[in-house]
Length: 436
Image (cartoon, rainbow, N blue to C red; front, side, top):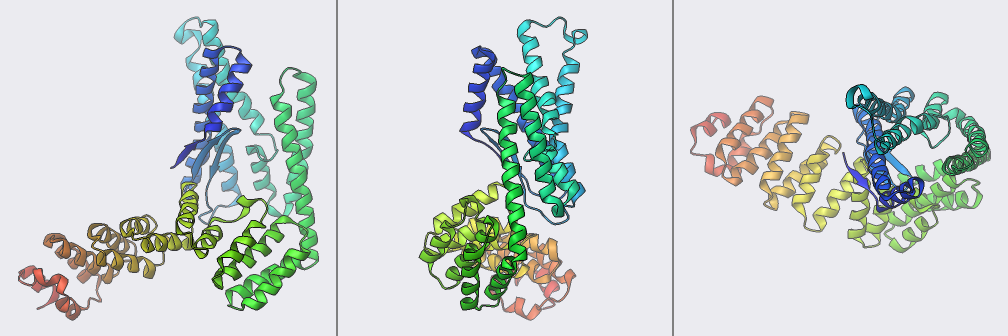
């Protein structure tokens, strides 16, 4: 799974370690401990997420770590809770093992520096892990509460989070006069939960006023190809919406109207109105850049989303198409191979044919073999055999043809007329397979 460590992670962690510990050596030790501990914490989330079928990606940033993943379907509320709990409990396990195996019974008496390092490991993995389980978003305990209460009680989740965060921040100020980081973290968390609760309350207004229904109608009109109606409804949405998500949805709909009409400038103008900018979904942003003529920009958007574990049929189709248009057929075939389980079989077969036509034969053969493995259709085995035959690998071609015959529905007359198989015409095994 992809892991990205930003420069901000190293800078903030090291500076905090040096200022807090007042010694350069302990600052470096702190940085290493935080790196290992945060990475293990995020791996806890990621491993369980992947166990449930997601494709996670990890980012370590200036304020800790983040594991992102697209819902593959089937991520129930209990499963989301387990994913959230896995991070802190990975830390508990690591911290507990370090404390256990650094007891004097195992290693003798520890020096002051070793005791300090032991304490840092315990604080980062066990102390902060306990704090992280408090029911405050965006901490893991908040995500557990969110999964437990469900989407219908989203406002309650934020209100509880804000109250708990205010209490923790106030207690930290009173009891830990020298430690500013805990009041800062929970003060920010309280403000964030309060703002989210307000937004969710306003979302209820959009629902009662029918603005959400207008947005649904705009999307329906867009899917039906009624661009004038979609444009008029989306304009009304952005004028009447009380909440950012609904307003953003209206601007996104306007962007898709412009994309469908081939107006890249208007599409870009629409997505620029989305607040914050990261709220634009990667597929829409890539489609906007493609419509505006920036194929490289569109491809970079999709590559970045992929690094963060985001996969979707339309994203992969656009990504493959961009690569093919740029003449990068081998990369397009490789991407289709990675997402063969996601792509519609007709689209994946088109990539196989494009690979064969572009003389990217071995990757095309591998993709065709993967499609045969997934769908057990004779035509996929035939395409694999064609690629192998063009490569001059008669044995592999005959093996694939045998699989095609076993799958049934083979057009043997078409095989005999295919010039790609002419080098095999004198091989008795080929004659046996095609009945010539």
